[in-house]
Length: 222
Image 1 (tube, rainbow, N blue to C red):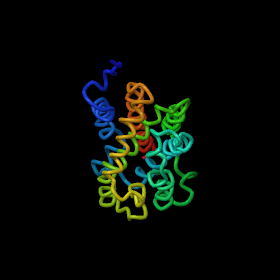
Image 2: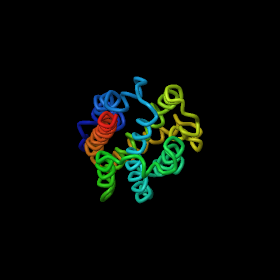
Image 3: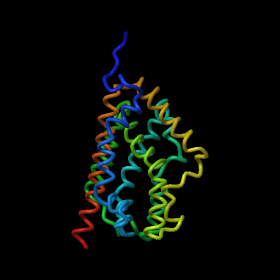
Image 4: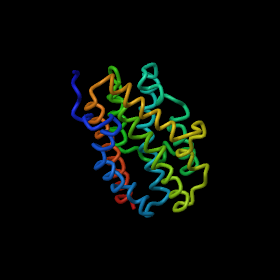
């Protein structure tokens, strides 16, 4: 009999990811500017600064996915209709103006997050799956709730919320199932599951760090 990693004794890799990252996922929702947004305490400037500081992570991830797109575990993720960097840039142009990249500060936490993703893509790139899992599952799920909240509380029009639009994905539920299969079958076969789980936890930690850094910057400069 082959070795079964401890994380998978109770089920699939995506189930293990969900269970092992649950506490960090909850912490991310209760930390920094994300918490302010969910509690309806954020303003447009705070949201724009958040976008400005997550776009480096998406750019790093999407460059890495293109580089590894030939591998089975990345084929469902390396899809233009899933990529978010250009959508975020378009939203920032509406919310903060065409010079958003110059006008909005890029915080060290954003660079740390992007560097972590770039490092995860080295070699066979197996750890990159964890970053795609954390970001894209969130965008296709909770992001849709966030879209409605931002429209109501910040008065953002649809042209400022394209981050949460997936016009090329007709059935988000089916697409998420395809992502789960890529993780549970291809990624689980290509690497040690614990590597993916550890990297997913690191991804949530970086999300918390970015969210907190944005909130701290806003407080210092209020």
